[in-house]
Length: 116
Length: 114
Image 1: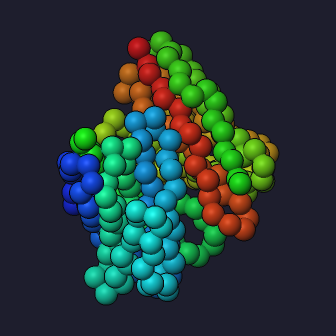
Image 2: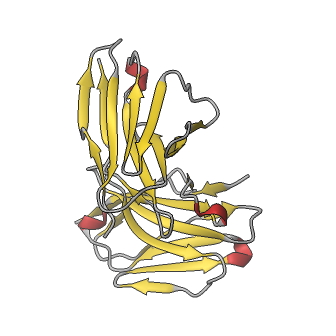
Image 3: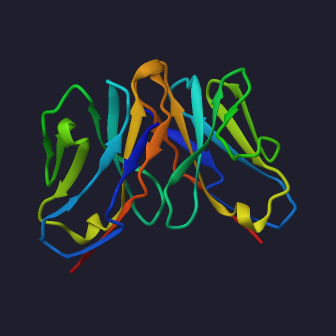
């Protein structure tokens, strides 16, 4: 069975602080995809990143960075110099690689509040 | 880029009525569409998977007679909530999959049943 755990329910930081959102996953598949989505108050899911299981290289995109550690089944997300606009619920998700299906298993989400 | 739309974006209805939600892939053909439900302050949970031209596959615990899914074309899937009740009030999000490439999420439909 596949499972995604986001242990942090809510995080509150002050603007310009760095913040890391944790994601731990469980799967028996050898190939899979991991995702991060941002969901602002409007509700629309905003795609942030997709990572293949065979690519453990960390990725940086502006103030966002992701640390994929296959050995610990973790795919953590760090926001550097946080801004008020980063306030949202962030979801980590897992997808099987076989069959091209887009069925996603989501974590429960972490609500990030960035205070001015 | 690939775009998925949903209509309506929000709907309020009386208990006992049926509500239809549309999910459209605007610039690509979606062989598979997924319907998710998100209750307030909770995660997204997959309700069902629909493939064009065949019956939908429902996740455990989802009533197929209550949540009717039709995927009659490669660009349109509909979710009908029949005899809606207040506990069906939720945020419904669809995802459309292309044969090659990743899936796209729609903007969601907020359903409130009075």
